[in-house]
Amino acid sequence: MRIVSHTCSNTEIVCALGREDWLVGVDDHSDHPPDTVARLPRVGADLDIDIEKVLALKPDLIITSLTVPGHERCLERIRAAGLPHLVTRPHSLADVAEDIRRIGRALDAGESAEALAARFDAPGHADHERDRVPVLVEWWPKPVIGPGRKSWVNEMLALAGGVNPFAEVDAESFEISPQQARAARPEAIVMSWCGVSEDKYRPHVVARREGWQEVPAIRNGNIHAVSEAWLGRPGPRLLDGIERLREVIDATRNHV
Image (cartoon, rainbow, N blue to C red):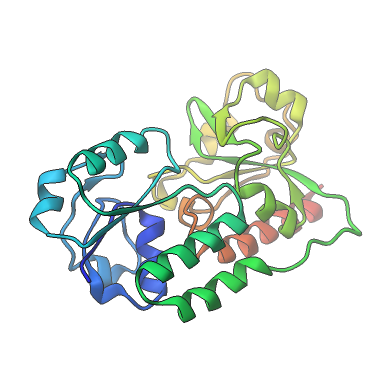
């Protein structure tokens, strides 16, 4: 079977299910596993698929996603070309588990998929004996974009002992104003900027943000970096992301 993956998370799922040899192309941003993706043709950015390149690869299936605004334009091109496709759009860890199962069924890897999905079904238990630490996970610095209610990050924070102070906002992600940040009073800010490598995250950009100086996380210098690969990609590494968030939250409890 010839597979093209058009999002990083789906590339990682395919490889985790042991079907990396079936991949014949990936999007420009897929970077893991590095040895696997290094050998594969690229079919364009996640928001700008190159249909001609995809057609040349003669895929039996394209696995794409609707997790980022703008992905729908790529899906329209895939459909217009009459290409067989599978679409993921998770909002929760349970959705991620179900997408893993769906991909597993499509790739005749049901047993491996069930084993991986089961880890998302029971990723651990939150410590209800301690107060939850409000943590802002930041997808983008200017304008500031963070997760709302329809994001798996809420569950990840809960399992790590934290809470998303914007969990009541009815959105996958949204722009956060200085007024909203001051009212929410996050005690920690986690930079997890989409499409930016972790070594290029700049805490001083957050620390100097106009109108945010009264936010406890900034006032106390409690600004952290966790790669978007661990928090923003709905794939296998979210489980490791929970542990990274737990480290941030434990450090915050010791800091205040």
